[in-house]
Length: 139
Image 1: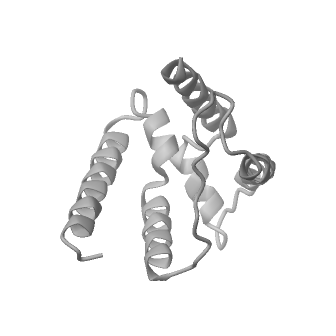
Image 2 (image 1 turned 180 degrees about the vertical axis):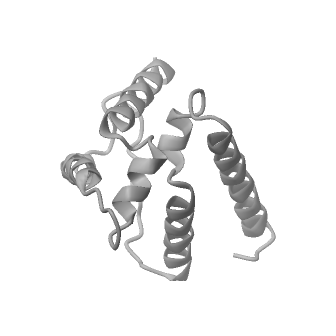
Image 3 (image 1 turned 90 degrees about the horizontal axis):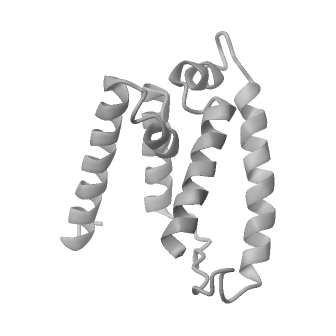
């Protein structure tokens, strides 16, 4: 049952990304190009997501278990450290270069062509490299 609900939530999330235009790299890059032909429409998508997420996290923080009875797992740290800043910078650079971030890339994997596959392969390689670096004590 948990896997079925996770699949349903993922499909709804993917559809939201598609409808919101987040899977279109040209639209994302136009949003990020504030000095050129800026397209502010994705700001509304993001503001909507932030509003929903804000209230969802506030509600979840008051619970010890999810609606499915599983333990609630929320971030415990609010620290802004070097790892967070470097990760955010890498995320931003990747987003700006490719026009994809992880969610929209996965939502586009069957229809996005070679660029999406290259992005997802690079993302997975980066995740594997991070795991290796943590296990070796480099991070």
